[in-house]
Amino acid sequence: MPRLTIAAAATAAALVFGTLAATTAQAASVATGDSRSVSQPAVPSVCQTLTANLATSNEQFSSSNEASPPDTSRIQNALNACKGTNKAVELTNSGGNNAFLSAPLTVPSGVYLVINAGTTLYATRVASQYQSSSSDTCGAISSSDNGCNPFIKVSGANSGIEGIRNSSGSQGTIDGRGGQSIWGTSTTWWQLATTAGNENEKQNNPRLIVFSGANNATLYNINLVNAAFFHVTYKSGNGFTAWGVRIKTPATARNTDGIDPDASSNVTVENSYIQDGDDGIAIKGGSGATSNVTIVNDHFYGTHGISIGSETNDGVTNILVKNNTVQGTDSSGNVSTLNSGLRIKSYPSKGGTVSTVTYINTCESGIAHLIELNPRYSSSSSTSNIPEFTNIIVDGLKSQNSASGATSIIEGYNSSHITGLTLQYVSLDSSSYTAQYAAVSTYSSSLNPSSGTGVTLTKLSSPVTSGSVPSCSFPSFPSL
Image: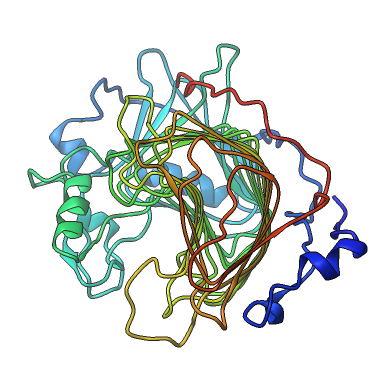
């Protein structure tokens, strides 16, 4: 998609906002997202096939199997043996046996872990089996959350985790068992997270999948359910495609983010269904800059929204969010605990520049915070990294059945860090807002922020680019 600018004839009149905002005035440019040409992935040929020896109907196994997960070594040995082949280790069911139970695994470079439809890989409930080298204890509460290794770490290039989808739409599953009790206790992973939040501490729970330095990685046609902590982190990589992913964890399960790119570039999340108890997407720049991200044709249920942040200190830029739906409840009717739609959040100790973010054709239903641009997301005594949000475009946004008291938050940090926002083809069923330190341009928008400290509003005579208010329908979460 080419970059477009507001017509030159309108620029001088439309983008001069007075003394306060004049220094931040700029022509709006449309984000292009992932620089790769991304198409639907394919399941690679098989290197080794492993058949299931277990079955369960309630996510639990015998005491001996729980204490010493029987499938760890044979899965890891197969992955190691197939390293560099660009082929798959396939897990498949055998008769009534449809379950694998494992301690943490590592997927090396050049190999894919593939799970057949009707087959589930279950994560161990034994906290000590996740223990990292940190002084924090996995399965405990402390001031930091570094005590656990992830269930699956993808550590090399040209690798990934995929499922096989059958003709009825079923696909392979990885189950983190976050709603089951930690082995040897009566406390579930999710209860530990809730207790930590109530005590203003952090839970040491394992992430489900972490891609670390894995260039050209793939997550395809896989169900990820009941994670104990974040479902997917993609960190310090170049080239990641998540396609056909179904994340299903209750909206009430604290800190169970869907997919979080961080310090990475060229990321696409497409044709996926995401419900969880935190951000559906959280694009971060906390340990390196993140750029060139596309979030397209996805559906969110009961999450905290399609988010950027909160860590943005190394910068986030060129983010394209297109043709997505966001619903405020999950598939069981649980309302999101922090019910947002389009969201950029940061704070002064973790802030940085978020720039060139374009939202095209977004549909919201049952949402409380329709647009949230919030540079004071968390309290901070430090002002070393003040957030600044620039060149943010919302092009085509419709909300319906919004939550009671629904509103938008359009804020910059101060007069030196002004949020730059363009709204066009926006139709909201609640035009309530709070705003400060924002330079806003609008065209055909029901939301026109004009009041608040340091707020300026310009009505454009023409749109940034052609568009329209989207026609919205909201699909149900698919059967797993």
